[in-house]
Amino acid sequence: ETGVTQTPRHLVMGMTNKKSLKCEQHLGHNAMYWYKQSAKKPLELMFVYNFKEQTENNSVPSRFSPECPNSSHLFLHLHTLQPEDSALYLCASSQERTSLSVGQFFGPGTRLTVL
Amino acid sequence: QKEVEQDPGPLSVPEGAIVSLNCTYSNSAFQYFMWYRQYSRKGPELLMYTYSSGNKEDGRFTAQVDKSSKYISLFIRDSQPSDSATYLCAMTLSGGYQKVTFGTGTKLQVIP
Image 1 (cartoon, rainbow over the protein chains, first blue to last red):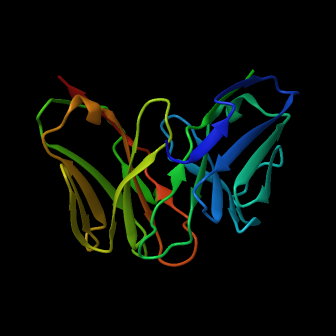
Image 2 (image 1 turned 180 degrees about the horizontal axis):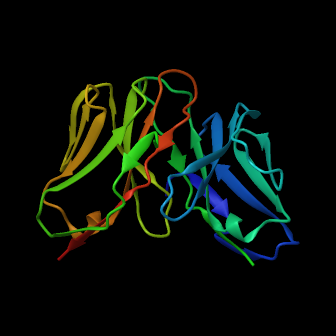
């Protein structure tokens, strides 16, 4: 286990539904990330939170709404999604880089299917 | 032009073979170069990283960076079936929190 958990692991939703993805990290990190992983594409960075403040919104449609109540928890609220939003959604965390701390720790992902 | 180019594979090799995985990139400002391994139905896990140019070895794995050519490699010696996974290269600029640019990943299958 990487110390980053995600729930649910699988989610099927209709285009009119509202759902939320949850991420929790037990590593004491101060930065958390949402990525979208689609087949044959590189990981797409969606949002970054550093010390609970959103520092990056990578031109993500407003139907995706992140929330970071504290440094250990991250949510992704979903509403009126499109079928092309079907993908694996990965949460990651990291410590601000020092010479001893490089790389991000990923959760197992939520496999999202939009019907 | 993509910032990071990586052959998606799949790459099939017999057990015990030496595997070479590669990425090219276009941004000469990248300083940290990483390799992640992603098993099926799992998130990526950091395998190893290199700062700037040079080689780094960790057991059966060797990472190489050639900044002059904008080319990085991961070598796996004595490959095992448990090495079957998708390998993603990744890179980032110096300083601050880590905004990482990933390759598409190469799917590797090691056949017993």
